[in-house]
Length: 288
Image 1 (cartoon, rainbow, N blue to C red):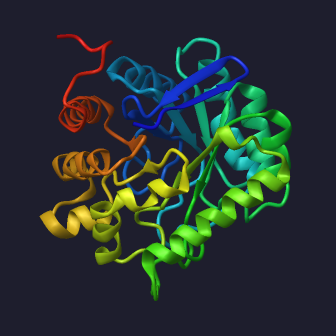
Image 2 (cartoon, one colour):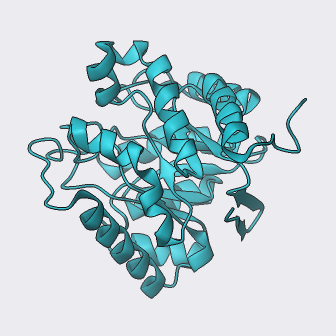
Image 3 (spheres, rainbow, N blue to C red):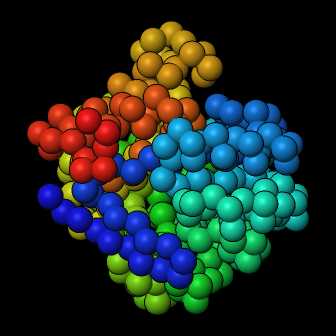
């Protein structure tokens, strides 16, 4: 069992002993799964607290939808959505807040407001100021694989060697982070389920998630409510909880250190059981 301990100002996370749950809080009107649910300040703050009470280890806050074909949002609007929410939560909730953005200007505002993790779907590629910012602030970064951009990633995803190409991309992302001065022990990798992937690609990724273990970094999995689940079950986005939990289980059994989900309570319970099965024991802090 590989254990990663991340220590940075005001926070410590231990990854690998059990699978952590990252709760998704989209302060947007148009995100594919929960768009509009947490769009007002009051809804967003209440939603974050609910996720913490339900077992979230990290709250991931985003102000721009990155669903397939989503239009790009300007930084000012994105900041206006997320900063008040982060300010209201940062000094009160007992878990770290992650900012889901690929814009350094937004990430800086979020960090200033109290966020302490950067979740960048571009793996530091879209904004040249993102890597220096993360290095200077000394915070963990999530580096995700994506083929293309949210505007075009699902037009015709194609790979000659799915795992080879994603692995090389993530290795390059790690090198880019290290060259910028980001600490090696603060890097998390995300293979990008649903981002520039076909239905079959997503199934193959989850089926063989353990193939990313040789990268030597904690791996985040984000299968929550994705289209491939709806394709299998013939369910709308709002009806995919059961399918999501099945996918979460597979990711945990295949080595995910973090799962990123919209519905925290069933995910936390699913992860607890999947972890116990995988390890043949329960977490020492779990109730008997």
